[in-house]
Length: 146
Image: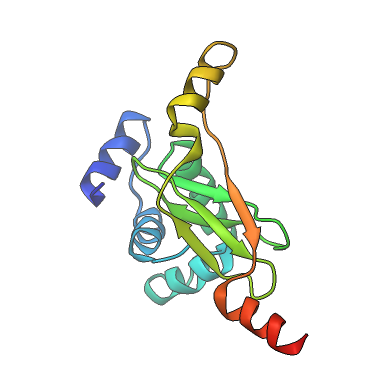
């Protein structure tokens, strides 16, 4: 999804593209990983030095509510992470040791079996899927120290 397409989504939902909202959205769109609100705030203040953290949170909440951004509250992390999703969503494998997030290239909910099972009894609006374990580096360190 392009920035202009994201702008169209906001307009359809009756929202304006403020300069701060634009910077929050662009920051997330350009990031290669999910970001905390503090990380987004640090990037936004480079462009808008007087923006408040509260303004960043309000914009993250709005962008999440309209479906452009995904908020995840990953296990063993004390803060939420935000990621631009546009018209696709993402899932991660998270290392329990170093907390590295590795993006998965598939969605288990989109499998035919899961879709058929849920379609009969439940209408999916959104979902989250996370896998926890150890990345290759941490697995190697754990086996080397054993």
